[in-house]
Amino acid sequence: MNFDAITIRDIARELQLSVSTVSKALRDSYEISEKTKKLVLEYAKENNYRPNPMAQSLKKGHSKSIGIVVSSIDNQFFSQVINGMESEAYSQGYNVIITQSHESYDLEVQNVSHLIHRAIDGLLISIATETADVEHLRRLQQQGLPIVFFDRVSSEIDTHKVIVDNLGGSYQATIHLIDSGYKNIAHITSSVTSSVTTQRLSGYVQALVERGIEVNDQYIKYCAHGGLNLEELEQAVDELLQSSTPPDAILTASDRITTSTMTLLHKKNIRIPQDVALVGFSNTVLADVLNPSLTSVHQPAFEIGKKATEMLLSIINSKRPVTEFENVILPTELFIRNSSLKVAPE
Image (cartoon, rainbow, N blue to C red; front, side):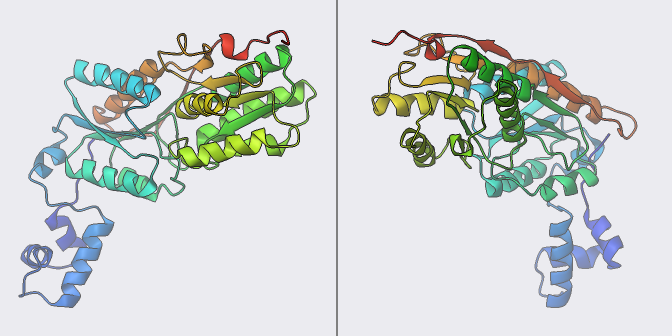
């Protein structure tokens, strides 16, 4: 299945102009009226036209490159995902081009545009926490670009998606805290629009309800930038610690939020787990050597990347349009360490 890049001939046909006129309009030639230039440029922009020396290879589906959009490559989770992607891509003779959104919608749109300009055969993307509108992706898919979502996905676009059992992971982590004797359990999570936020919040709420613990909205804190903005996260932590009944445990919903929350608690001389227990979603390889060692929900990041790439390449290499898609949910695993273990009062 090939992504058909729009050409000058396509523009000319749609606007009922000559190829020469379109070409000159795109070059801002004095020979073409401003009205015609405006018409051509607007159509070209709306339909993702890019003057590109690799356009012919893209048209034939032979660029042998796939684009990747993640929030940040210094995030342990995403770096492990990328390792899985590279492993599968290289084994099938494809190269990868990696970009970072830094949780910005505008940067995500810019990165996707850049990748299209580089003549990618397909796109692997985890949506930025700021992204609520996926029209930039929907338009490309409608034009034929194979897209596979991983981790943070959109329900508005029908394609292959690879996620982990977010609900089950947060449910298991919350049950662990309840069974360990904690009753006032807070949850620090990411953007309210993120699919991951919704699923992990659901698991947290489900565990509380099942064990007869009232859900306290004051204990649920959203960080729109997923922990990248430390001031935003610190405000959430401060609000929890300064509440009339401070939490005795915190469940954090992402790698960066987890490790940054631990750092903030240390700076505020909050003892873990004596004052506040901590459990998070984290793929950091340092979980065992942190002080205290970190109880965390581990995600099979490498497998996510490998599976997502395998599915993308299956679309790219398909001889016919792909109309049936799969939502793959990989299991998580809770590793219990010292940060959540109840200790006797001193």
